[in-house]
Amino acid sequence: MRVIALDGPAGSGKSTIARRLADRLDLEYLDTGAMYRGVAFAALRRGVDPSDADAVTRIARDVELVVDDGGIRVDGSDASIEIRGPEVTRAVSIVAANPSVRAEMVSRQREWARTRGGGVLEGRDIGTVVFPDASLKVYLTASPEVRAARRSQEVTDLDYHTVAADLARRDALDQGRDSDPLRTADDAVVVDTTDLTIDAVLDRIVELLDG
Ligand code: DC
Image (cartoon, rainbow, N blue to C red; front, top):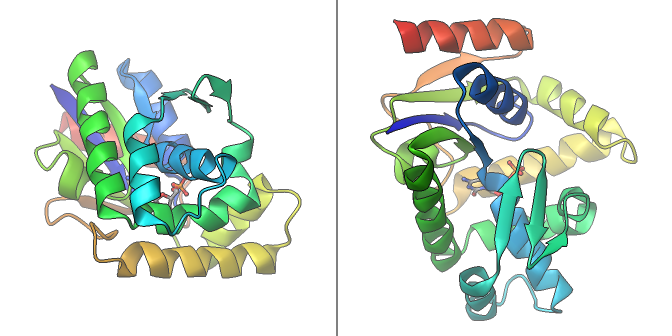
């Protein structure tokens, strides 16, 4: 099974790179952040407080999530736009810090790759927890300023300073949580994308795969 693990903080370029890499290698791609966002969305839609750990765990276990390129269906309805909105973005860190939610998502992610014979998976814990034996682990990073600038281009309704503050808050939560925090796997290759074009990052990763 050929699994490529791409981890790193928000705005490091993971989604763009994962999608393009999967295309080049003729593999499928999974955005695992979209799954945590899907659980947060389902909780909000059902009127459940995202910090109610037991209720959110039940939702994580029974919600139907179908993630495909650029989109997600949650219990049969398209929620691709909603999962990127401010409410879900505010709620997702607490949902992703819940160990039982993580156990459920990790098992779905392993199953996803098993049924496809591998794939490109992007997230925070792919190389450390989900696939510690991945064929290649890349940890993408970039300066906080560049990451905030990339994100504020994506979300047109928020200004740079709001996006930068939200990113700093999420970095702290993702890195500081007890359950599978964002960290670099010992055997991951760190690629700093601050001054690199998308093509340069892709070339570097393909070089690592061939090497
Ligand atoms: O990559 P993103 O911004 O869509 O991720 C949404 C949230 O989910 C973010 O707070 C980090 C968390 N996440 C995680 O804990 N583990 C993953 N494998 C992917 C995302």
